[in-house]
Length: 332
Image (tube, rainbow, N blue to C red; front, side):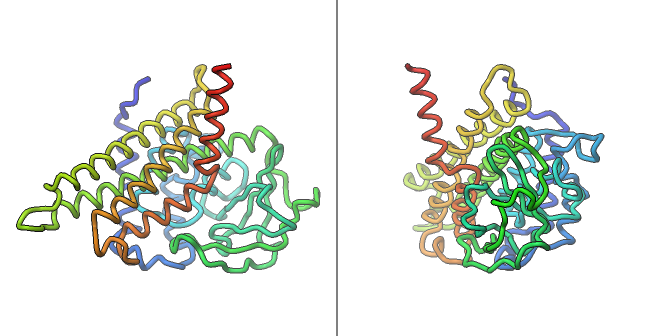
């Protein structure tokens, strides 16, 4: 399989990177804590076609696909871009106004809703909440729900709120916007694109650690010249490269299976990318030493974002068990 990016894909990657660096500078990341979604930035993202990348041209979308989506979301992960960008992108084929940025969309699995209560990322910013079941996707206008109760977030850049009256037991509540096929497609693409975000996070952690190791001096030389630091950086590079390769492969298989198993490829990518993001962010904390663990340093934000992303669209253990079952079934 050819993994070399063509000129259009490289241009897309660079354009998104420049946009993110301009709109979401990492040297001011602390200013984003607990802040609601910037609707001006959201509109600018829509104008670039970010939310419509999975939508065909005939429906007003970008007409691209999972491969370009992986390139885009890798950059979003690298720059810690806030907001429910992933769910809004996944919802674009199902919810009017999502692709254009007019409606901000979040989502949860139906099994997460207990007696109408469910914790949702960026709950206070949402116009629409998608509830994804085994055989249906239901959209709820948040204006018909009670205002969410704010919760303490794990990631300071990812506010969380609890809705208390999501009526999943009432078949007439909400709007059915998709069936079993739409739910399966949403989960598959969500897994691939969340893996891309994690791969971007892993890559950013490596960049931060490497830059610090080249600048920080001890005993008159950069600490990057010490063998122990070299080993840490080498391991970080290996994890990041594996995560990126697996994610690109999963995106390619999702776009054109050609006999491969998209679900297995997506699970492998998510497992490797989550491991890379969490391990690399932790390693960056270690490389930065005495200040690496402090709240206002970038590794802190990268590690907490990695923990949050790892839990979405199937945690690592869930994907590992799924892959193990498949290997065991093949052996039998």
